[in-house]
Length: 384
Image (cartoon, rainbow, N blue to C red):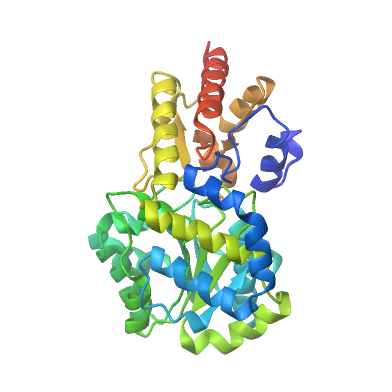
């Protein structure tokens, strides 16, 4: 069955039918006490949304979202909302295609990014993530490896958890300096940025202040979908530099009218709850589950690769180079355990991903512990 699947999303759909689903990074953990109060108030939030102007709900959502993230200088009038990050990515891809802009995309990354681009006629060229690993060499490495008119980064990256924030401000500053000097459009997917915000080692600085002050042409994509347990009700945000706004807006309105006012209303409550608890509800479950994964898999053939940011996925290297991720995954499915092979993340050179698997962490801790026990049993049986 897995050999017939074309992308990671198709794998994730199959995983939803599996007892021990460690595939998709969607939020499947239970509600925190504060979030349960919001759920209890859903009828009132429904009627409140009915009585409130759409524009007011949009403005309120943008305000609390960017306040949580510390993006205080963002020009919210150039921010467009959609009901999924893939829709925002589609709009960005359509802008690139309409203007015949070639793009370099980081590798590895989640494969729906190159797929969306290809589906609108944009054919990305890979730029290796390790070009960003040494802050003192970012500028030169990008100058060596980027031959296109746009640069598309994911920060923090999925699946590796790498972030330019590991260099403080300097990482983003060097990327921006390169893009300005070489007249590149910067597209940056920030859909996992909440995990940097929740990670006490990092947080976020005001990136939009840096972007706008530089005069850079940019498109930034943010999201709620991987942050809170919302039964896949979500909102994505596309913010662009002022010079791009008219063209991007005209594409955006050809795709959709708005996001559900009810969804915006209760999403804003979840954001406010995270402002109040300092992102504890997001941070605690991911931290606990990563610790469970490390403890349970210690000494197995899966070696945990420490992420820069404590994101909601864990990236493991297969220590036996004779074992391929696709073969191991097929074996795990026999044990009703579903993980993702690294091949799809290496969207330009899938063979490089045969050494890795990805495990999702956003699960109820007890269910996750049970899944990891089963995973360890299955992994050990394969290695025997």
